[in-house]
Length: 297
Ligand code: NAD
Image (cartoon, rainbow, N blue to C red):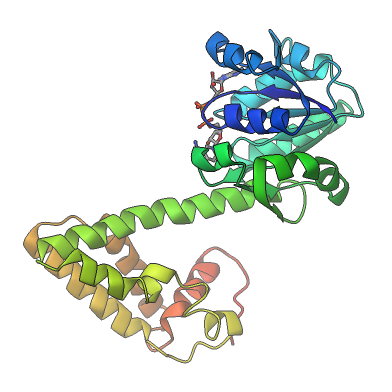
């Protein structure tokens, strides 16, 4: 069993640390909230008055903090982890931070002689309590293998995201998509209600179509991802249908900023001569606009 310095005992960190302790590890815990530390101590953890104290004698240091600046300060600031950490220990940042900050912290810790990886998590505090988080591991194979016993206590699934810095990248992309989709979904429901549609009926239709299922597993595999832009449903028609929905929304007074922005993407694709291509060609259009290699013929 290992000694784990755990820093950041909030909604997520507290249950994650608790699951490590239940798994038999020795916990040295630090948080700016004395209350959070006290409740972990009541469950057998050792209180640390600074990150340095939490890291002293630890095999692992886990950070679960609100942002990257706090993680950096905790690791490399005054009384930080780096002042006491063993060179054999592994630092695992499990917070959600900016990926370029992660890259810089891993590089700066390496310059000081320390091994650091990131492993942000998917799902919610309910899953943190149940020990069923989705762990998105960004590190070398050796780092991930070393951390795996801890991940298995905090989560039910670990994904090797493909190397250092890749775990936080996939976390941010995943959150980008689900957070933006949340507002798109809200626009659809508000418009449904404004035009008198029964939500149950609408939901049962949309749960079976790309609207509810997403495009990665429905419309894209045989089209843009296969390099085939021949139209199953063409950009011109998608643009028309989106325009009808937006016009309807304007008439009944429902603001739909996500849909309006999306229509401009279809507009751009049409201007680029893609009107009769498959609607999945918006991906090719965005690749082109971003200076990335286009992949379809
Ligand atoms: P939280 O605000 O509940 O917890 C953060 C903890 O960090 C608090 O206890 C706070 O006192 C402590 N803290 C702040 N500054 C500190 C410092 N300098 N030194 C020591 N402790 C300090 O937040 P949370 O919901 O536990 O989220 C933590 C991280 O996990 C965030 O990066 C968040 O984006 C990410 N996350 C949250 C969820 C979720 O559902 N809540 C899910 C996945 C990822």
